[in-house]
Image (cartoon, rainbow, N blue to C red; front, side):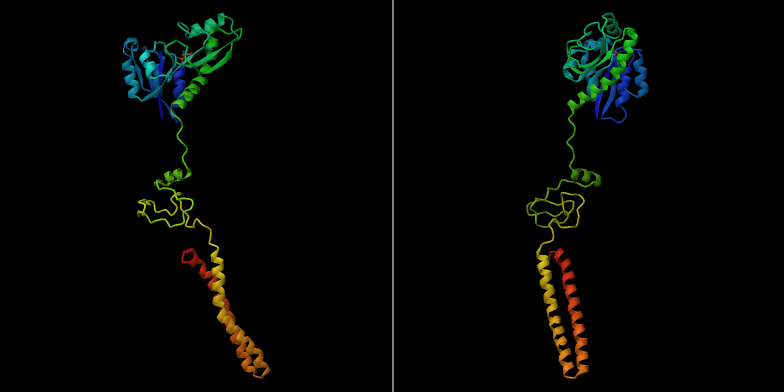
Length: 333
Ligand code: GRF
């Protein structure tokens, strides 16, 4: 959150616009309004909007800028917006807020700026000069009146039928656009946006778990120590997650299934099937020999035994190939 202050001396429509723009959910907050006159409309408007407003007499603005700075410090003010403020800003304040005081002026500066050029005087001078365009400017306040670097400037056209009042109304509409824009632009230069969070950090925040475990090296092949245990290098695993780079840790090993699984599976299947397979072949051979010897009963029993051993061979083959899978995943082979 960036706290800003507005300084105002009159109607305060720009001050109100800044409060309405920023004080409902943005990262910028108008936390304070300072005024240099009593009984001006802006005081009541700020009270209605809930913005703390403090009046300092002109003598304080002139002779005791440290009192102003102290109030700004207490409210942690990072930027000042002069919204129709008519008192002179002392050098101490300008130096303390170097480049962080913005002023809005109702003309296309540098035209129609300087001493005495404020409010209706500006619009009257523009009309009298027969200008075809005017506008508004937000600039950084320096020790030279209306001469600091321009932050945002926008034009309006001046029509032959325009009066100082109608021109003022048009310029005000543009001011309501460019003043918030200039504040955002300037605040952005003061507080660089936070570095984007990594996906891991974001998940760790969502799940409420720490994400301060060192990442697993790319060529990591060992197992992760259990929760709270300490490795020989002195590193601990406080989360108990099997993959510290991700708060949601799948129980699947990082490496693909080793190719040796297939070889072992084939060997085990052959070994398991060989003995019952040989027995089945022997009984199969007996079936025909017994038959041609005329021992039909012996041939029938040999046939039954051959069937049984073929089934035994098949079942062992299936078991040896499928039961080997969990053993492989458990890392026993
Ligand atoms: C604005 O026109 C601004 O440019 C000038 O003073 C006027 C203030 O108007 N500095 P408001 O008090 O904000 O209505």
